[in-house]
Structures are given as C-alpha cells and as structure tokens.
Length: 432
Image (cartoon, rainbow, N blue to C red):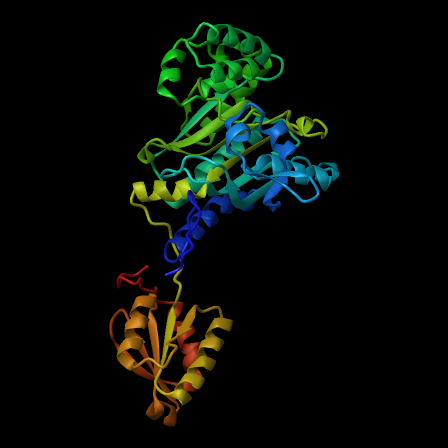
C-alpha cells in the first residue's frame, strides 16, 4: 500500500464516479456553447493582488482561505480561489474588449483552491464551471446567464434547485445604504473582528453564517429599500425577463454573496437536500471589477456553478446523469493468433467511433466473459483457432445471451450496424 494519501480536504476522481463528474461538466457547459460563449483557460495561480483587489481584502477568501506562495524571484502568487478575476484579467490582457464585439462572452472549467475546514460539499480543492459576459450593461444579459444555468440544471434532471435573487445597488445608492447599515451594526454585540469588517465592508457581515450573528441581523436595513430609481428599474427588468422565460425565483433581500465586486443583480442556486452547504452555484453583475484591477470601465455579469455540489444534488434527488457507455464491444481472443486478429478488429472499431476493448493478459474464456459483462458492453466478439480457420468470429449479444457466427471480414461493419439500432447495456444488465 502506498504511504502517500491525497491532501486533507481534497479528493481523487476515479471511475466510475469520474464519468458522473464528466457528464455534469458537459451538461453545465452545453447551454453556454449554444449561446455563443467561447472557452477560456487561465493559469492555476495568479498575482495575489489580483484577488486582493477584485475579490476584496476584507473577505474571508482573501484574509483566511487563499493558498499563497512566494517565488524564488520574490513574486507573491496565490492559487486561484475563484474564476472571475482571472478570466477578466485574461480578457483585458488579450484586449478582447477592443475587438468591437461586446459583450465578450466566455466560459471556463477548472479547479479552485481555498483553505477551509473540510466537510461534505466544502473542499480545499473543488471544480467549477463558470461563465462571464464582459463589457455590456443590459438586464437581458443577467437574465440570459440565469436562464442558461436553470436550463443546465433541468437538463441534468434536477428539480429541487431554488433560485434566490436580489439587487445590491450601485455606486450611486449603495453608499447611502452602507452608512445606514454601519449605524445599525455598531449597535450590535459583535466580536472585534466582525466590527472591523463592518467598518471596511458592512455587507460582508450580512453574509456571516454564524447563528449568534444572524440572530442579531433580523431587523437589519435592507438594500432593496434603498435602491436608486435606475437600480430599481434595472432589477425590475431582470425579473420581468425571467418571468417571460418561465423561470421561478425567490426574492431574497438578505442575499449578498461573499465577494466584494458584485453590483446590482446577484443570485444564488441552492438545494435543500445538501444540508449546511446548500449553495450549488451563483453569481451576479460586477460593473466595477475591471477598474478595480486596472482596466477600463467594463460592466459585466457572470456566474460559477460547483461541479462537486451539483453531483451531490443529483445524488440527493437519486438522479443519475446520462453517462455514455465506456465500452460497446468487448473482444475475447482465445489464443495468440486470435489476440492479434481481434486486436486489429478492435482498432478498426475504435477508428469507426465505437467504444471497444479487449481481454488482455491471456484470460481464459470464463474470466474473459466475466470481464465483458462488467464492462457494460452490449456485444462480445469471441474468436478461437477453429473460428479463425473458418474466417469467422462469434458475436454474442450480452443482453439476450444469443450468439451467432459472423464472417470475420464483415464483422466490423456488422457490429457498427447493430450498435446503431440497439441500445447498450449497463454493468447491472439493464439497457441505457
């Protein structure tokens, strides 16, 4: 046994679970590709200041959860704790906003890192699918991204996801609310660290999950009561568009999310079957982030959906995502000559787009057929010396048990033809 283990708070993805994760990633990203979002990939680490400025120096992510390091040259880097700041930095660096086609619509997939207390649904290494629409201030973009996420959840078969919706105002109306909120918070019985946070960014206190703090926030002033006319009109338009698209949502005036860059529209997807870690994704508008990290004014909106928590949500609803068969055809050679012949047939099938595998290691017929059954294949191709002498192979339907001889030179085409008309079976013996 190896003396090494995965670091605390992380996990390995191995078959068959990894196939479920891949299916979730595909389902979450598919609506984005259909809506014109192009794929972007950024480094796993960035300059610490990118996240300090963008995410917010008062957030738990920056103050407590970032993995940081100092290079031999003295540069301070951080493993990326979230995706938006990195994607916006990449878009600005490549001058995508100057190409004359705004908004720049991008999606991404990757691993992110936060030093947190590990528990189910909260890991130090986690996977997300994200999307950003950069460079346009339009409530239709906010609604579009929300609808794309809703459609992804529906495509996976999730039915118990709730959408929470709020507006955080903008630089016109939020300062007035900020002052009112600070006045309220100063009258509460808060610890010293929370008091400091209230002076830097009081909205962060509203995001505090500790029961002792939340109990005191019942009568806190609500931002929705302080929205300026422009923000109120904008939020009403987002809600109108969601209604038109048939999206159900819940107004949550206490929703602020955990990042400093959000303005106006903010939203969160939650699943009550996950316990304390109910959020499976969320996002919002971040009109000032580009300027925070040294770029021009580029109003933008985006979201990130957790792959890990989406998988947990599926399991909570006993929903299995559609996973393509790992193997459609399993070849069973009996003898060295048969092994060479069926190796050629398997190669032919793979080149034709068929998922095919071979019994390796000189297994006997009994063990090889057990492997064929466990593989999930619909068909087994069996060949021994007598079959090859007659230039035939045996084609066995693993669902029905029926077996017949097929000419070797026609075997590839015949298997392809049959796979086009018959569904494969799962390792449990049921059709998929």
